[in-house]
Structure formats: structure tokens, C-alpha cells
Image 1 (cartoon, rainbow, N blue to C red):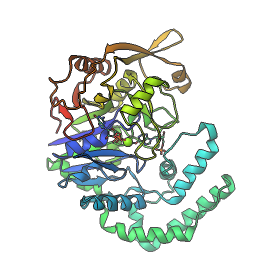
Image 2: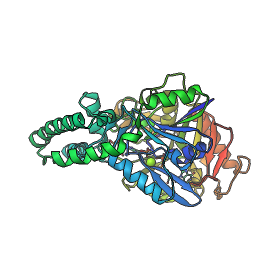
Image 3: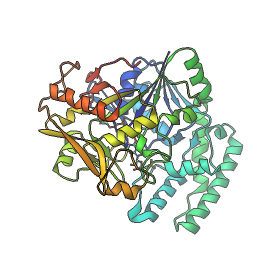
Length: 427
Ligand code: GDP
Ligand code: IMO
Ligand code: MG
């Protein structure tokens, strides 16, 4: 049996989609358990690019069953659009199940996301405007609707209409917005309810049975550890638990169900949206990383903020995830630099900080302490083995292992499936 959790170690977009697709060639099941279509996971197969948002990246491997777990916030419109897009590309997308406990994202969540962001003005979070925060807020406030509610159409209609009336009061009275069209939304979602019925099951049973039967099960993280609602750079976070802990509650499995936790880690740092980022390079070096790494969002198209590798961040995320191995991604993006910097600690007011701080005003004052290593100045995109990497690249990897305390088990040297160097088999 092998159960592997794949989590983002930084602020998302680390290359999770690529690793999931790579590992999914050996997986029986791929499970999403947190976030929603705010995620944008890229998979490149034989030069063709696929962008996945809500559907697990295992869908491109025909044998894998794909699960959208109870911890996901589920947008039916996005779901059907994604399936249709995949089918146009010749992907069957026919082995997908959706948890009957997943909360539903409605158009009023998207409207609220927009209104809350506008109200925050300069302090806005820079959300993806997919309604994720408002949907999780409804869940926690115990007023949300779940996919199982869709299975009884008459009562679903009633619950949804009542919820929309409540939300419209908030929109008009508190946020000075325009009310959403209740009847149109109810009709639209009754149609989705009918189409979704065959997909909606108790996914917790399926996942636990697969684990018990000794199948290879991959848990696909979305977002990144630093965006965790509890452990990330609050309030500049998403509203879910993207780390390994999120798989317990978000897929309905026990704490001892996962054998290995792979931290998907960029060879540098990026962040999209607002919030502090200690190693950010708002200069020509940052621009060069952005251009070489094509660092523009898959979901929103926004330019990502770029900087050197932040070892304080990745050490912290290894701790909160129990990471057993690192997949070091996009190493080829650093191919042309004379020198590369690794942040191993922060400095603030003359003292050294080794542990990631909670207080954002303190974090804003931190400056990175860097170790400089020599660049390799070689195109590594064709390297197939660890031994064939330049000495300087291996030295950089070793530094990262030392700073984070986690062995690098996979090295990725390009977006393609065949640009993956495996030092230690994971599944
Ligand atoms: P995810 O959200 O974690 O799945 O990551 P994204 O798909 O948002 O962003 C990662 C980007 O890097 C995608 O465009 C991938 O195709 C690309 N990518 C992944 N691994 C590599 C790599 O090793 N080298 C390069 N150059 N690109 C990569
Ligand atoms: P993947 O899975 C990068 C960021 C948004 C914003 C904050 C809150 O592709 O790595 P939200 O819409 O979730 O309420 O936005 O979180 N964010 C991501 N950043 N990658 C992601 O997903 C993200 N999902 C959300 O930019 O700063
Ligand atoms: Mg992404």
C-alpha cells in the first residue's frame, strides 16, 4: 500500500499539478480535499498544456479514479465547464466522484467576494474572486448548502431561495450592492442538481476502502502551506487548510492513513496576491525569474511576485506538514544566473529569526539573511539523471536540504513529464 500527500510548501503554484500527473501514472486514485476552483494546476503532456482548477490532476491518467472530497468548496458551473473543456481535448474525464458533504459555491458567494474585496480597498487580499472565502464562511457559520442537499430537489429549492433572501439583505443593506436574481439562480442550480446526481456519493467510504485494499492513493494539495487559514500569513491567506492536516478533515481519513508527505517546492519563491514576502525581489532579478519561469497565474493571469528561495518558509512548512521528501521544482529557471541566494534566516532589529513569525508587522520588518552559491550557467532541461546535473546545481540542492532539513527526492527541470529526475521512488 502507498498513500502519498502532495502539498505546496510555499504560497501556491509550486508545480503540484506536474508532480501529481507524474505520480498518477502509478496511482489508483487521486483525491482533492481543500480549496476549490481558485486553484490552477498545470500539466504539460507532449507539449500540450492542460489547466486544471477543480478536477484533480490525476484525470489525465485514464486508469485513476478522481475524488473531489468533502473539504472542497464545489462550484458546479466550473465543474461542468472543466469537464467539457477536457472532453474537447480528448480526455474522457469519466472517473470522477464528488463528495455528498462538499459545500456548494453559488453566484452570491462570488458577488460577496467582490464586494468584500472592494470594501477593503487598499487592504484587499487579492483573492481570485471565485467566491471561496464567502463559501467557507457560510460553512463555518453553519448556513451553507452541501451537494447532498441537491439530491432532494424540492427541499433544495426552498433552502436555496431562503439563503438567497438572507444574502440579498446583506448585499443591499450592508454592502450597498445590487441583489442577486433569486429565481434565476434557483433555476440554474436545479438544473445542475439534476446533472450532478450521478457524481454525488459518500467519497469518504470510497477513499477509505481504497486505502484498506492497499491501493495507491494520491492526495492532491491545492494552494500552499503559507496560505493556510490557521498557519499561514493571516489574513493574507485562503480560507481552507492546504497542508497535510487538511486531508484528514477534507477527505474523511484517519491521521495514520498517509505514508509519505511530499512538499512541492519551487527552487525560488513566488506569491500572487497581497501580503508580506521577505525574499521578494522588486528589481531586474525578480523580473528575470518571472520571465524565465513564466510566472503568470493560471487562474487569474496575474503576474506573480518573485524572489530567492526562502528557507525559513520551507522549514516552517516542512514542520507543519510533516514533510518526508521535497520535490524541487523549476530548477531550470535558475540556469542563467551567475550567483544564486538562499535565505536561511531573517534579521530584525539586530536579532536573528529562524522561525516563521505570526505577527505580520514583525514579518514586514524582517530582512533576509542570505548565503550565496555559484550558479551553474548550463541548460539543465535535458538532464535525465541526478548525476548528470552540474556540480553547482547539486551543491544548491544540498544547501536546500540543509536549510529545510528534508531530503530532495524529486528534481524537476522542465514542465514536461519526461523532465523529472527521481532520486527516490515515491509511489
Ligand atoms: P500548481 O498550482 O502548484 O500546480 O502550479 P502552477 O501550474 O500554477 O504553476 C507551475 C508552473 O510551472 C506551470 O506553468 C508548470 O507547467 C510549470 N512547471 C512545473 N515544473 C516545472 C519545471 O521544472 N520547470 C519549468 N520551467 N516549469 C515547470
Ligand atoms: P494553486 O493550487 C497561488 C491566493 C490568492 C490570494 C489568497 C486568497 O494553483 O497553488 P482566495 O481566492 O483563495 O480567497 O484568495 O490566496 N491563492 C493562490 N495563490 N496559488 C493558488 O492555488 C491559490 N489559491 C489562492 O491569490 O492571495
Ligand atoms: Mg497554480
